[in-house]
Length: 437
Ligand code: GUN
Ligand code: FE
Image 1 (cartoon, rainbow, N blue to C red):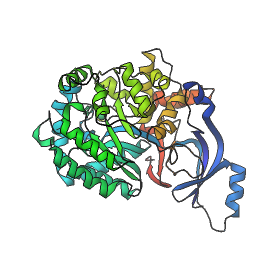
Image 2: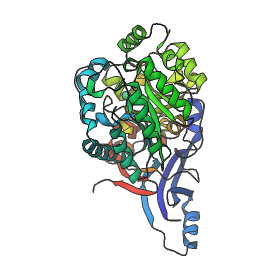
Image 3: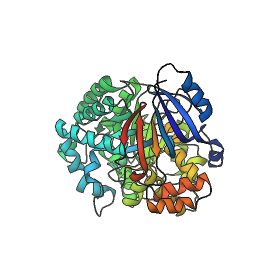
Image 4: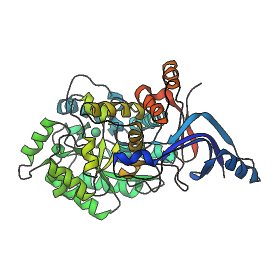
């Protein structure tokens, strides 16, 4: 044992297949003790038993006292663009204009390794300051963007998945490549980073409109060569985008059919947004065991549409939460869950606090096929966690003092919460962020 934590612990004991089962999976341990060995969770239980175990140790073990705090598994962000950090909150456009107006010019700067390194550091700090310990991340078309990001993540031994964007048309020259170059650069990055420490590589064709058939053919071939590789892309975000896909690939009936045709569906394939899916596309995601990243702040900010959570349960599709910065408006998962609730309200779907926290932790882990490693506090899991301060502001304290149940307290956190509620973040058993006093 190398470290012990005392506090109130909240997590989910197991993966569930319906929203009705989420609450039964919720676990709350008041005033308990967690024992860590390096980067692993060894044990979690009552304070009495924990103190007994600590007393048996011959060496002194540091005990962090978080008595007034709520300790939850590190948040998992299943869709985010690190090279859009500096353009968050860009005014006035919907998806396609927003990409041309703001995104592509911003991403063009990442050809510069020094700049990419500086922004990687800033980006990882933002994740940690917001309690996010694992993310599935887009780089830019430039391989050096991903080298920079993985270098920073590796130095913290973070569990991070990322990839360089692959795109060969319908964008400025500065962010385009040829299919051959894309293939070479991607394979080099895979050999350098995939399964290095806690890092994994994700093939990252941006979306159908920036992909030629030749490029998608390359992605297919690389995916076939690396069975445990991830794939991340965008799907059915905006209605103009969907019409454009139809005009570019008229031989395919639906948007998802294009990806599916190139074998770019399946386990470890994560599709962001999925707002305007046809029933056939839902079935295809389900049958291929693909995953969805639900990005409420982005979908509202770009006016893209409302995600149908109900359908994701009904069709049994793996689902995680995404911030989608810089179309998303926050790195903070509490705020993201608060917006997810409002997306539900507009469709008469009642997102409970338990369900929301499930998607941000164990559900997200499952969507990335990592629920054997992260997502809850089972013994043997990796020690990535967040210490939340539920009463970080006067308003939160007032409101919390009026909440009777745990569910209500969690709901107040996701409704009023933000980065002020993140008290400590631990990655690999080590404190990597402390809220300033
Ligand atoms: N579709 C293609 N590229 C992007 C992107 O960078 N952000 C979002 N939200 N959608 C996209
Ligand atoms: Fe995105």
